[in-house]
Amino acid sequence: MSPLRYLENVVTLELDKEICIGCGMCAVVCPHGVFAVEERQARIIDRDACIECGACAGNCPVTALKVKAGVGCASAIIQGWLTGKEPNCDCGGSC
Ligand code: SF4
Ligand code: SF4
Image (cartoon, rainbow, N blue to C red; front, side, top):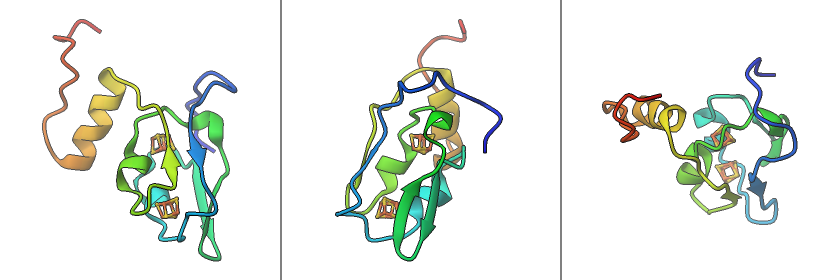
């Protein structure tokens, strides 16, 4: 379980188990260990650790995941890690 927590019960993350093919990509890209993948099926094991960065939904090959991806510095930093580009959230360094 991630030590970093978001607000409880407000996360918009949704997993459609009927569509999931169990590729495991969501568990690979999620920086907060939100998913477990067992027997070709993803499961949300720590929903409140989700920071709504959007990486899982953006990398799911069958669009089984939906999340209202946040904006701001945290999201930009994670996207920077994933893409290898300089993080940029357009805040001008004010936060
Ligand atoms: S990335 Fe999508 S298809 Fe792959 S395990 Fe996760 S939810 Fe399932
Ligand atoms: S939105 Fe980000 S933090 Fe939340 S489950 Fe997906 S990859 Fe993990």
